[in-house]
Length: 406
Image 1 (spheres, helix red, strand yellow):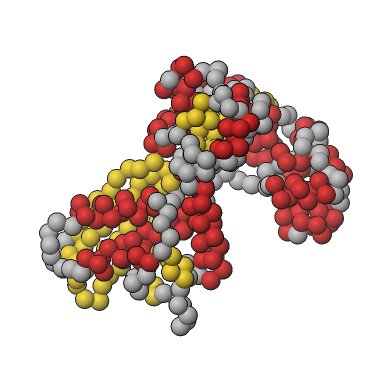
Image 2: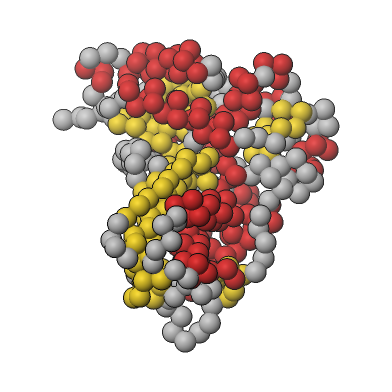
């Protein structure tokens, strides 16, 4: 029996720019750059008007301003974008059987079997129009038998349009496109392809998979499959309440504020690393306190999506200061991040923090190689136990970070 898959990919067009235009209609049709407004800032989003000048997201703001000097610069507000993202999520969750939230502005939906009742393409079209009418945000979609082809199709549909790739036409659709449009092909991989004289997907389709593996290792087979329109990846269903947490129970109840704050900051730092390592963002943080009389209290707050230490640690400390008001000895403290969604730290690039982003990457690379506590901030150095696990240094001291990231 042929269980024909129907995978829908939806992407909000120039999401941050579109949100700003909803707030101020005078920005419609004008070149817009969202991101860090100083010379060290990074472009988080660029309107289509600026792209005509060669501007793209991830570019240094200084370069973008040189390419398009008439562009209007907007610092950006992560809280605003989080609000609109959640509005779209709620609309989609209400209508589709299985929803994956790939990022704040990107979604997959499994519509398999819905053709028995009504056409998937008709349903997807109506869903897209519902998002547009309810939120005012432009959104594009691609529909095919798998995630890869649907994602590429969405890119071809933009701006604010839709494409369906019929079963059996995946390879012809992909063949004339740039190899860079295949998910998993980043700048370095693309440069390797260019060095081999390969720029179009068609060439990869014609190559033996063994040759791809010899050049790109284990990723070669994966890229070859995607280029041939083969992708059996299932959707990861979106759950609003996914969370990670860490607690420490003290051997002796304490009121030592230095010890308590060092513990919660160390836990927040470690959990933030876990977020980035798993390509997740949080929008809800909480602190837990258990006093010596075993009474337990928690306090949480909503924040814009982030995975950045320099945002999360001060917020955790602020919650602790608000929560700790009984002045009794404390038996246990804990930190929890919830409302997790897939995503990377790029959503936080509304400040001049390119050095901060590079610093996080360097820190995380060290942690992945030598252990989660091999590099830490000076303010968390005294924390001996994180989540009940003693620091695994094997006699070797950790690298202590005293660099200011805020």
